[in-house]
Length: 114
Image 1 (cartoon, rainbow, N blue to C red):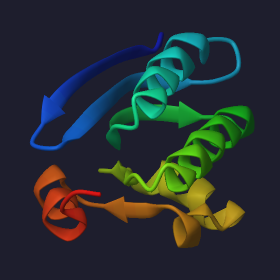
Image 2 (image 1 turned 180 degrees about the vertical axis):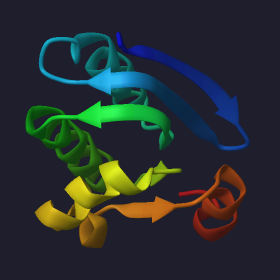
Image 3 (image 1 turned 180 degrees about the horizontal axis):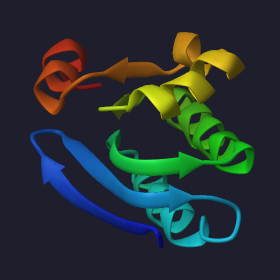
Image 4 (image 1 turned 30 degrees about the vertical axis):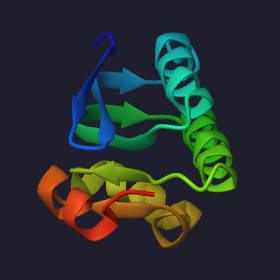
């Protein structure tokens, strides 16, 4: 399945939705969109509810932009990760580094604004 990436404003956050697979072959639209919002110093939530696969290079890109957001004192969190994808985050230890929430409401309530 091809990847589709969209974004929308939700309260004080940009919510980026990824549908399909996220891999080195198709990461460019995702990376471009995330970079745009990191550069604007937006608070970012990435909704992974429709993500079916992620490779290690894509995990690396998420870490890069998470780190940049931290340096900008902005929130960056992941949402709605299915159990198979969550396993990748646990194996790499990223579940302990990047905040992960089960819903947008839970994230916005916990994070507020930066």
